[in-house]
Length: 73
Image (cartoon, rainbow, N blue to C red; front, side):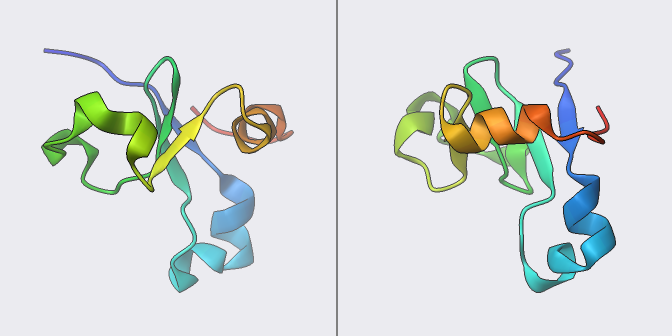
């Protein structure tokens, strides 16, 4: 069994953007974040860099997710 840390963007949830399809839940992969809702069923975990749901940690969006003042893990 493997445990994965999940980052929840509360700003997106409370603003209502999540109901409009904006990602609000990010799975910490170590090297980046995945916003695919059914992450545990993903058949392409090895090819994350080419996936639309993937955000590298070293990118500005990845750093913004970590730097928000009220994330929940």
